[in-house]
Image (cartoon, rainbow, N blue to C red; front, side, top):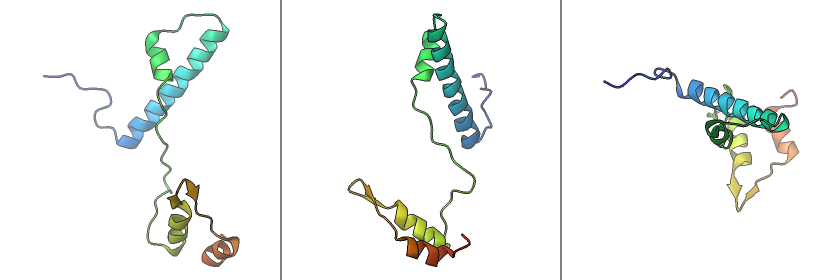
Length: 98
């Protein structure tokens, strides 16, 4: 039977947050090792070169709220240019208090 990983049972968010911290720590170690003229292991260098996973914030879900429709329209990207939303429309949709 295969050994169970220490990550077994973790949610995807927990795993990605841990991976992100490990990558950032590896980048810091590589930088410090360069400044102190020390050797850095190949494993740490490979980890430092990995692309950071995206962070997911708890309140970032887009639902059916009218303000969310405005966010969806603002995030619509066509031809590499984000669609702009007039400030008056933002204030009308969200209200002056936010």
